[in-house]
Image 1 (cartoon, rainbow, N blue to C red):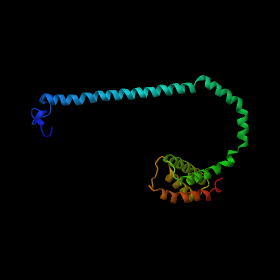
Image 2 (image 1 turned 90 degrees about the horizontal axis):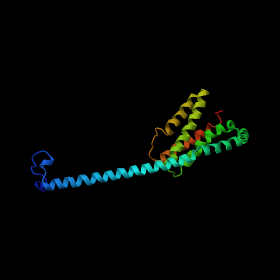
Image 3 (image 1 turned 135 degrees about the vertical axis):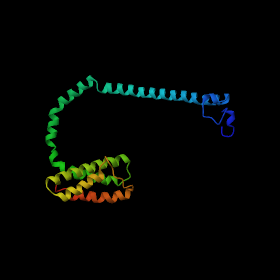
Image 4 (image 1 turned 30 degrees about the horizontal axis):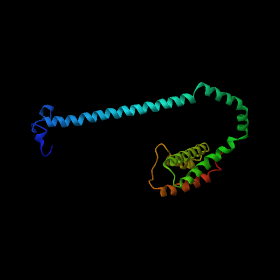
Length: 192
């Protein structure tokens, strides 16, 4: 069209209109538009078919899993095992292990984070560390230890998974993780 515009358009000085096209120009415009349009229709119909097939499959799977028959079976099992669950819950003292969980879990998560791990693990470790730091900050706030509240508040902000702070280099994160692990370890006895 650039070299020989008169083959496609009768008058090149006017605005584009279909009446200004030659027979060859009309052929090229319609031969390009309609096949592409038909191809798009086929693509959309295929996507709709796959989408409906997936939804039908999920509906049948969830319908089987959450059927009334399975619910009744689950209810019978739970009612049968209630005394065992109560006995085990009494044997495990959650209050004794609660404070250990909030300083051990962040240290373990940060120590594993030193290894090459997938991105999803680092998001999980951010969640664990920020939850532990929030727990410590809350307990130091109740004890009126403002300096430690600010430090653990900073750790919560640094490791928060909602608005993550990116330091872009794993080596920098390791240098930040080591003092964080040490600070969790130092303060393990102060939270009661």
